[in-house]
Length: 398
Image (cartoon, rainbow, N blue to C red; front, side, top):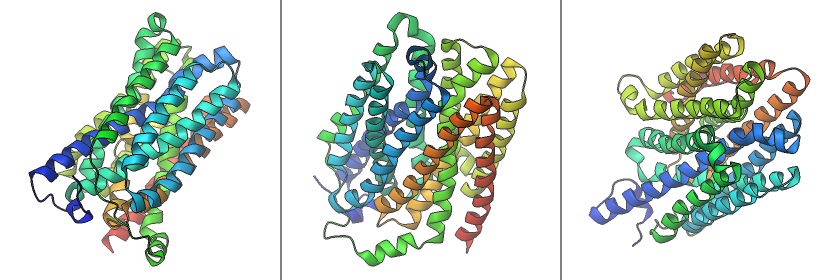
């Protein structure tokens, strides 16, 4: 069956409620796989340094080009899904993610790794944007809670591969670990392929006057630049944390991977408890409190000389960052419900520019100085998020 765009507001009958549940489950599987995409490069980075004799700047380039792929995909997916619907775009992107993981597993040199991560970025960008936009459409009365719930599955995916590497790398080997990720990508591919989807919201074409309205929105761009700095932080911390603990504290690959897994676990935990916190605090205040927690934790990670305390600070960064991205997306979805795909596309694309620049900059700075110095990048990003969130809070009240 198909439902029309009006049914995004309130499901009218049991079959539509069932369809909403199915599509939410499929989107959760999609964002789970995107979590793996986000975390896998950071998890295997120390091994790539060893196997391919990479330099930090080359590693920074991998993050840059993977995010470039995500950026290209995110710019395209919004108008496409608003015009043609979600189904084919989401199902095929899940399949391409699986193929890209397979290519990464068998890459024997730097150029093959680079090609694989570019395709991971392209397909992962569609999974990320499409899954978030679809869930935002399906749950208009509780967008922030629904998107944070979706983020829990992102956390599960991001946590999984570092956890497997930290616990079973010697038994399985890195190639088999990556092939496990490839196999998991088939789950959203199957679900997106077999479930029915809503009709396209703009099946008759996209009115240019509405595009101008979206592009000229000050609220959209305030939210988009919060995503710019937040994506930069999630990619920088998630991408370089394992290497940081190896460089500063001489942790083994397995132990540093477990710390990275803990970072993603606490990010997931923060999104799990968001609905309860939202009963006490407004979402804008939650973001400001999250920034403060993250700021304190990043400062602690940079300057703390004690191993166990640095690990706690690393995990608290994940807890602090948890609510910022999905809560900001909910603001965009609420402001543009009829053109959520396009609005999400612009917001997520802006975020991915930050996701390209920040980890690349960390790589450049660490090559000339140290990773400890390079972590000043996420510190600066958090200050900017705090300032922009104050302006966004005023804009929402206006």
